Length: 336
Image (tube, rainbow, N blue to C red; front, side, top):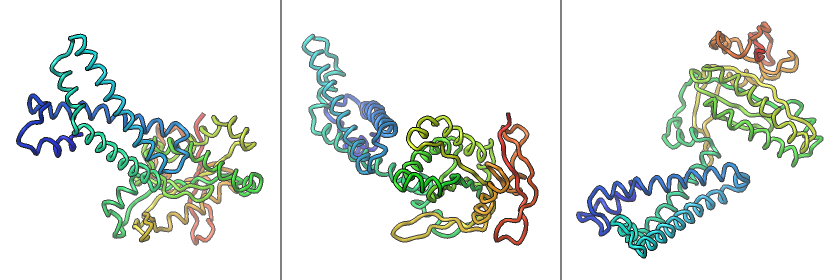
């Protein structure tokens, strides 16, 4: 709204007819900005909590644009009705007369069109952020990783237990719905722990943080155990639709990686390092070691476990597949 008022009115040496003073321009921007900002927020909330989030992206973008258009039109007619009622009952004030005058001007129609266009543009950016990740979209836009750069990263690998058996039992379509339902529960947990999803790989997902962020406040353990709890809370739903509650195993590892944008027509930020390969080998040891979650010794040394909700159990050095040297491995469990 500030941008609209600035380009529409502030460049003119004369105030518009409805403005008593220059302060009315700021009042218009604040007042209308709050109203349409609230409609913007409400459309996002409805889209997120309803079946709209299951529809193709274009329908979500169209819905948000139409919602703002209908909301703005409804507010305009309500304001017009109240103004006419006040005038008929001789209760009109200068402000009511000015607001009525604004509604009848062509600039108000231009304002509505402008806001709808802006809303559709924002909705498109929001959907692209959901598709590739908001931080990835921002970093690609800023060109942060167009040249490879070294970073310290913490990775968490989640993988469904007995996924091959489940896929054969459910069939491809129902199994894909199972994956959708499972990972939809993961989204809030990832957001609450300020993590970012790097990549979905079928029934597995790779999550990461900058190292100094990931080791804070038990975040790397919180995601796995909170996600497992969410699945258990939805036990009735999963048993009704799939006949079982999915279980996941996890592994976490950290180290130096090289981050770079790859691709031309479809770009993404990729990480190149032995850290990810070691992480996958570490996750393969969950079943042999009888653990739900494993972390490497390098990561265990960085975690502050004094006030932690979790307990680390040293499982000793383990020979990971394809590795020349053994890796110190710790099992993770939640304290009773």
